[in-house]
Image (cartoon, rainbow, N blue to C red; front, side, top):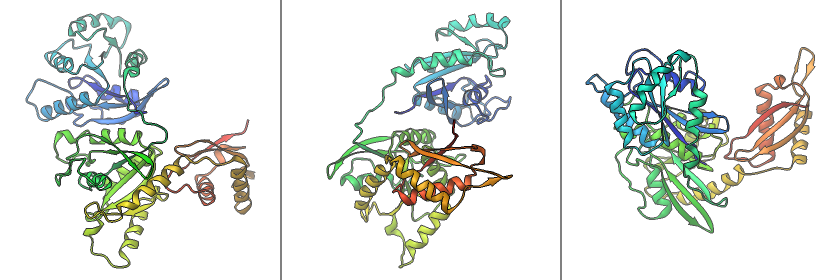
Length: 436
């Protein structure tokens, strides 16, 4: 299920980044007492009680000709368009300003749930400052203090009330959902058209033509698929059209809804740092991953070219050593037909569940070959291993001392599990717990 999206919106210097960091639980957003310091939106996953959601920190909106303010206004409007729920943040100490009223007018047009939060209410004696904010027409104002973390629970309770009204596209369990992610102009839309054999998705040589995530239902050889195309993700700081700036969020939402993610690379341009960051989103989300090298027809090749490229990919994508690599050309449709069988296999591996008895035989044999580590005369003892989840396959290892499970030995156990079972294309998660 797609996580709801919450955007924090307001004029500059009302404390949006501080509130964002409080909700996320770490210092992700830059905080500085200068209006307009947050010049780009920052995205993060967050949770409150039983609710998981994505949250956006936006630049402020102000009636001024100061540098960046028009761009910040565009970013905030885009974020409001993307959000399911909006937190409208104001400064309680300064009262209502013309800029606050301007933001309120923009928010009236969204027709989305808006929760008014009055920041910098640091103690109960300041609650009298709330009354003026009723005139904004945004309902009850919630007093909070970003610097002290006060009132955030009540605010998030109110925000979460709107989550139940968010509709999500649901498909049957038998449908394989896969998305294509990558930098702009690597050929994601062209690959979908090559699958379908028709121009179902607009294809253009202009980077970033795809503005939205597009679901395309497709059936082949008795298997139902949903292909999710996404806007290309650009490196932060690069000057580009403002409507592309939320492509990262769109891609993250597409990844969440996918069983398998195709990380598309451009063979002509080679591997770039942004490719690794993009692939990292899919890996961290625990999705099945296939690395697709597109535009392979444009490369001058000999009998060693594919092996050289494979070696480079493995060196640059060490965290995706489990992902199969497929070389294709959307333009000539070379090897495109080979992608769907790989998607099928990775999807099956992603949902694979193994028998506990066989699993423990493999672990016991592994320990016999390579004994568990010792520390100051104390030895790590592994009692039992069981699979507790799929998508991705997740295993719990019960031991005497969890702190003694070194990451290198955990990696050894993962490799042994991969040798025994077919988990190609899917990450594996191992959790170490003390036996009680």
